[in-house]
Structures are given as C-alpha cells and as structure tokens.
Length: 457
Image 1 (cartoon, rainbow, N blue to C red):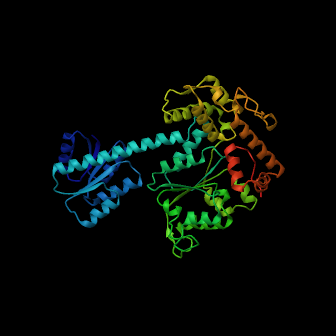
Image 2: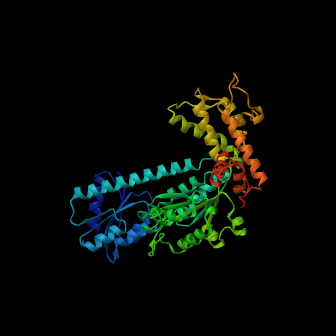
Image 3: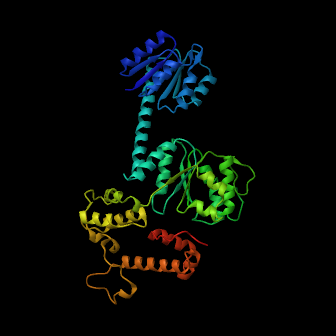
C-alpha cells in the first residue's frame, strides 16, 4: 500500500478517486490546483501522484516539470478526458509512469497504481542498497573519511568535474564509484588507467576510432567517452596523460563533443569526468608536465583521500571488515582476528595504505588453519621479525621452515629502494639498473607500497 496525492480541479472526481483508493488500502491526500499539489509534495513521504491533465487554466504537465526539477522521489500518472497522441507523448517524455484516458475502469486504474507503487518501492530499495554499498566502499569513521562522505553527498547529484588526490592504495577509485552511485546518472561507470598503455592506445581507448584509422583497426570502436555517455568516466593516474592527449581531453571537456581517431564527425557525449592522481598536479603544472588550463578544468572540486597512517583508528575496523568478507568467500563465517593480531596490525604504518592492509588480511585468512587468525599468519615484517637478508639465506631449508615470501619481498623492496636512491628517483634509470621495463618497476613500486617520492624524468 502506498501514499498517493490526487490532483484534480473537479471536486466530484477528487472525491471519487479518494474513496476508490482508500478502499484499496492506500493513504490519500487531495489537491485542487498546482499550488496545493506543490505544498503537499513539499511535505514528502508520497509514493505516487495522480493528476488530471487540465486543471482549470493550469496543466498537469507543469506538475510533472516541477517534480523533475526538484528531483522528487515519486511516480506520476496522468489522467484526462482530452487525450491526444501529442499530450501522451509529452507526458511520457517528462517522466510520467503512465497515461490514462477518462472514462477508465476502476480495475485498470488500480492495476496501474499498484505497479507504480511497486516500482517506487524497488527504486527505494535499490537506492538504500547503493547507499549501504557506498558506505562500505569508503569505509571508516575517522574524521577525514566522514568529511569525504559528506562532500560526496553534496557534489554527487550534479555533473561537476571532480579531482581525487591521494597516495596509491588509498581507495581513490572507490570514492569515484561512490560519486557515481550517488549521482543518479543512468549510464555506466567506466574506468581507465591513463598510465597503463601507450599514448596511441590511450587516444583510441578514450575517443574511439573509425575502421581503418590505423594498422589493426579492422572495425570501428566507440571509445570510453561514448561508453560512459549518461554515466561517469573515471580517469585514473591523469597526471600520466601525454601532453598531446591533454590538449584533446581539454577540448572534449569544453565542447562535450568527441571525435574518434581517423574520423571527421564529432559525437556529442554527456559523461561526467572524475579524475584521480597519486601526485600533485599543481607541482606537475609548475614543472611544465601538465597543462594549467586542463588542471583548472579538472580541479573544480578536489577530494583528498588520506593515507591510512593519517587515520590509524580505522585500521582495526577495516581489518575486521576484510576478515568478514574473505571469511564469507572461504565459507568460514566464524573467522576473526585475535587481540594480538589486531595489536600488531594497529601498530603498522601500512605504506601501501588500504590496499596493503587488504592484501595482508587476505593472506592471513587464506593461510590460517584456525578460525582465529593469530600473529603467525601475518608477514614477518608485521610480526616484528627481522626481514631475512640475502646474506642470511640458509644453505638448506631449516627444520623449522623458512618464510620465502617475506625474504623475496624484502629483497625486492631493498633493491628497488637502492636503485631509486642511486638514480635520484628517475624510474626509467632505476628500471635499467634492475633489468626491468618502466611499466614493471612502476607496478612493483605500487605493489610494495614504496614511497618513491615524485617521479622524475
């Protein structure tokens, strides 16, 4: 059963509908004109509006417009004795749930009412689920996280461009997903890492291409801007976008028109842009590596996601949250951390941020033989055990066993840090010293949560 507003300038029709709907178990409020209807809507808690098309010198379509402009969470059914194809089409375009012609059968109206209220119920449940999911995505009760959630709630409904800054592993993409969930946009959430491919591939991925635009383009591709039309396009590591593509992205942000590679015709798109970076774009602008005009286009609203070391009170609640998730995946619902394990986790700085904590908990849950996850399931570095150096590598496997994973991780970390120190944090040179590709060393730095400082060329 639902709460329904009946709007009709004829007293007899208002009374008739009110009696019919009350008998069906609904709560009913009546209004004779648009102002009374607006006042009733302002009180909230309504599921459905049933309005006549002609309200004296006023129109029920104006009420539809008001509901849309105010983003009111109600369905709306239009009834009229003066039905035409044009008015029906206009009503549906404005978002009416249905359109009925007088005289109508009672059963016909009640079926439409029940379906409209059921739709509203499903929408509310979906919204509540998204809200719950969003709280899970940006997990934590530390003040900075609460401030992020509050700001997301404020800016999400519009199409304002948002720039998210934060270290690797802090959860920037999760913030972007929450923005999309709260936006009410009907299109998809589409994500792309700007530093994960060559400039040519980035251009084709973003803007699409026509058939034959380049070698291997055996068929046309619409590109991610068009895939995100009506939704959100998340551009991760925007600071790594090549200069030529920065110019093209700026043009799209200004004109909202995309021209595919090899094409001559532009295509209008309505994709909200959310960008993220683990470096200071202001510093990149000052160094001449990032366009100042593009920075201001992206930096309309800025969100900074704090590293985990700045919100240590969230470490244990986050760890418990991850344990519950992995325990469910392992079909071991009673798994939990021992007090000593929680103490060790709380005392770690987690340079890899939330991603590192998640990986540590996943590893511990997978390795634990008991539903109680003790310190022995944690990596050696978290247990306070000294990391084994190459000089301490045993000649043979000891009877007590050997933590090979900790040894390899510690060795990899030490060598990468030494290479970065020797090359002044020039990653390309550090990669050469280690016999790695640039992409490989960048991946390893992120995986190990190494604070390598600003990237230098």
